Amino acid sequence: MEEQTPILNLNRIKGGGGGIRRPLWVSVLILFTVIALFSLHINREYSIFSIPLDFISGRVGLVSGYQQKSCSDFFKQVPARKVVKSIRDFGGIGDGKTSNTKAFQRAMEFMARFTESGGSQLVVPKGRWLTGSFNLTSNFTLFLEYGAVILGSQDPNEWPIIDALPSYGRGRERLGARHISLIHGNGLTNVVITGENGTVDGQGKMWWDLWWNRTLVHTRGHLVELVNSQNILIQNLTLMNSPFWTIHPVYCRNIVIRNMTILAPLNAPNTDGIDADSSLNVCIEDCYIESGDDLISVKSGWDQYGMKMARPSSNIIVRRVKGTTPTCSGVGIGSEMSGGVSNVLIEDLYVRDSAAGVRIKTDIGRGGYIVNITINNIRMERVKVPIRFSRGANDHPDEKWNPKALPKVRGIFISNVVSLESKRPPLLVGIEEAPFEDIHMKNISLFGLAPSMKWNCEFISGSSCSVFPAPCSQLLENESTIQCPN
Image 1 (cartoon, helix red, strand yellow):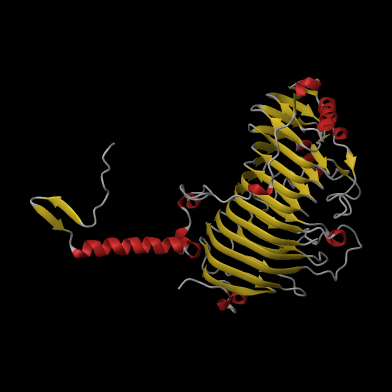
Image 2 (cartoon, rainbow, N blue to C red):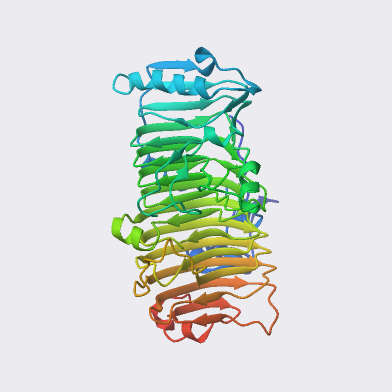
């Protein structure tokens, strides 16, 4: 066995004809160093200097050697599928030109036969597979091999019109119905969308042009939407160029979205990365997103329609997400939150070159609530407004909205935030008739602001400690609320 050479012998050094003891001050110094390092470790949540090294460098995650937290157990593993077929078995041609809409529809009709008898898997091999919308089935896996690209059809008729979501009362952009998503599912259980980093490309420019030209008739479709579904896993893929929001689970539960790359041009309108909407137990982790809107958004319905349906978003975890959005926020809650949003954990977020880092949006007429939101360990670079609470754009589904329906915002905990090259100080603006309460900030360091720049706060109350530069007076009135390091 190879001899192990000790790094340090604290007691004595052998040599000469006897033992030479170290000077006392050396042992004291070593002991002090050990104690200091141990103290830094146990107080890591309180100290700006204790942020993990790879977090400081922009690689969101824990230092090597630490086991990363995960919420992936929200998805309960499913057995191997009984039937596995290729899209080629249904007449698919992956040349990037031939329409495969019928092939995907035939494939899904076939796969549906095995929903109750062992499940099925559809493999999309290497190639470019042009298709319109298709509907998934339960106990099903869609698997994209390396080099496989699903291309969204450029014919709007291959994105059929479906009913508006009841919690919105209309299409989000236009009155009436809306276009279906490219990959769609309703009322499903045990669905996996995965692969070997295959790609789904919505080819959304056609839809963005309709929006920019003001010729859009119906609300654009999402790239992937699952409605009233449970036990869903989406992982190991690249999704790009969505016409509208990219991944939209709505009225769902037990959803895991992980190891995804989501891309859209930074000026592409409303191309949110992931929108968790009126859903429970949602896990979003280890994703990279570039988009023309929020990287991650948590929603729960729009004004009176969301209040009537009363389907909240709750138990949402967003962890180790990186990205950029020049027009919106890294993580946004609202502004459509009328069914309620609660118990949200956002941690290990890295946002660069963006309009906002974290944002809470609501408005008069929304009703609902945003409560118990924890935001921790956030790193930002060149973000215009690192932390922002604000009213929305005064947009309502129709003239029946109720101006007396006021939202409740309470219990927002933000800690361990570092923002470099910040452009503006935090903007925390509540609603005069419904102030935001219990807003707590700890270990916030915002660098790059001119000395003349001050926090802008209205209609909020809470507490703070270890915040630089000094926060607004509304967060200094109750400093004893938070336990701060000595």
